Length: 109
Image 1 (cartoon, one colour):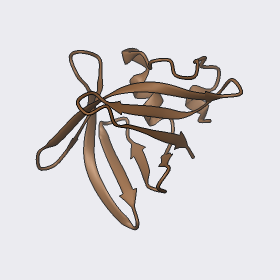
Image 2 (tube, one colour):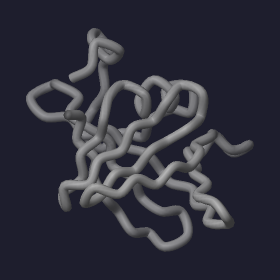
Image 3 (cartoon, rainbow, N blue to C red):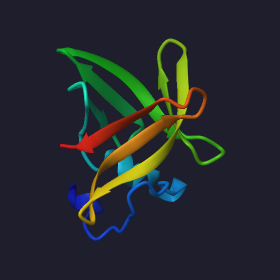
């Protein structure tokens, strides 16, 4: 767990509050089940790395308090964010697409 989340309390599956999204996504590199990684910077940039190739995009919180990302030139998506907690320790984030309902888990490295 990142030092940014030390002392932070969350329950497994609980929604990440809009005010906590910046801290949650920037707390550390996320690793996905397929081995891809993603880093979210505090300035709103994000880098997704998969098999030696990087994609750079942007992340933001929309007017409804949802986490969203933009990948040039035109892909935009918003997600419901939920905490992943094991043994009372925050271990990652679960992203669920608002439009398609597809879920993927990112574990803090």
